[in-house]
Image (cartoon, rainbow, N blue to C red; front, side, top):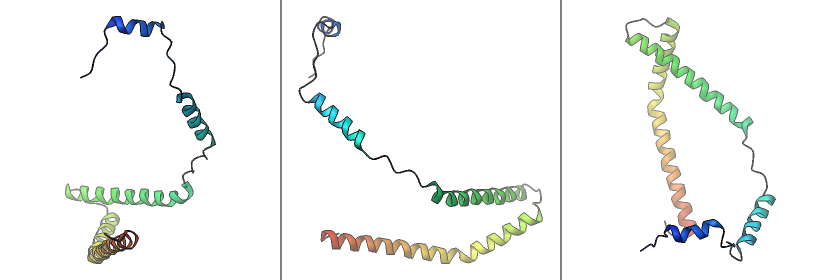
Length: 129
C-alpha cells in the first residue's frame, strides 16, 4: 500500500532546506546520451523526387474519380451529364468490367505467392514455420 506524504513532510523538501543530489551515475549517463545524440548521423532526407510522380498520379486519379462521381451524381438527379463525361464514364465502366476478373485473379495469385515465399523463408531460416 502506498504511503502519502502530508504537508509537514513536503514543506521542508520543497523549501530547499535539504539539498537534492542526483545519483552517482546519473550525470555520466545523461552526458553519454548527449554525446551519442551529438555524434549520430543526420536523418536520411525524404526522397521527394521519387515520390512526386506517384503523388501526381494520385492527384490525377482523385480528379478523375471526382469528375466521374459528379457525372454519376448529376445523372442520377435527373440532370443529364455532358456527353463527353458520360461517354468517358461508360467506356471506363466497360473497360473495368472486362478486366475485373483478370485483376482479381492476379491479385489473388500474388497474395498466395507472397504468403508461400514468406512461409518458405521462415522455414529455411528458423527451421519451423
